[in-house]
Image 1 (cartoon, rainbow, N blue to C red):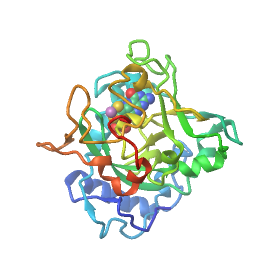
Image 2: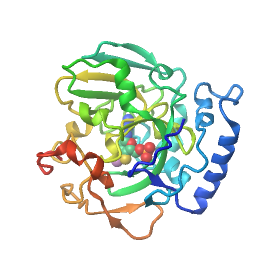
Image 3: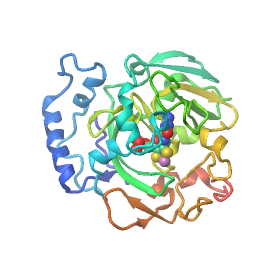
Image 4: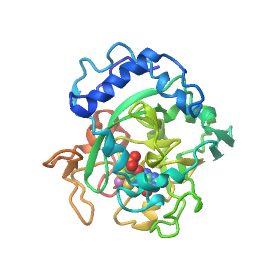
Length: 314
Ligand SMILES: Nc1nc2c(c(=O)[nH]1)N[C@H]1C(S)=C(S)[C@@H](COP(=O)(O)O)O[C@H]1N2
Ligand SMILES: [Mo]
């Protein structure tokens, strides 16, 4: 079921050519109702069909931004396990086997164990969320994700009072990930959030994109989306969720601690040591646009960082 109440952070689709097809297909999806795809990669094949949208969920929202072209979202990626060029993930990620998939949960919680994707994600409660995504490299997109709030997953796992942070890991498998041997990162890819960030309603665990099952290059079968943070916080193809008392040391912090911090909140005022973050290139645009603090989600999330020095906590 799609969320029907409009929140101020919800983006709308604008009327562009690439979106035209999408709208048509969405209407088709609506008409199809729930689960018809015979034999199509269940349970993920059922995903598109669970998007039983209300009449027009995009009417009357405040923010109007064009969705980024689907070909760019699926073809211009960062997923270093499959190579470092933007086209490498879409060229190579077909070797990733996403069904079956299991996620190990451990640390400070009442429900540790090994879970399948469908144990953690309620496929009857999927929502579509259109979010801006801002990469630390100063480009951005507007992406229609499909998923559930991470908080829904965390509640099922019952973290204890000792759990102050959530830690995530991507799969590490040389057989499926050709670039692991060449990569700059010490694998597996590691990320984390403070518990209040993880529980924030904007924080999404995505299983789909553009109304369809998540493509491998976008982090199938499940990946994190934290729209007010730089894209690298959005750890892909998650195989581990841990509840920690201490702040995780993430992949990018390990690699270049003076360049990448734990918080990684989008902030035009705090430059990367090698480039300014004041502007960004929206993929598909000719000219650059100003970067928005907290990627435009400050109204919702700025209070999480009240009293914190955002220059020190970059
Ligand atoms: N495992 C893993 N997750 C990752 C990355 C990666 O290289 N490996 N790149 C990150 C970066 S830098 C960005 S900008 C986003 C890109 O997500 P997208 O390709 O779905 O747009 O994924 C993030 N998650
Ligand atoms: Mo990124």
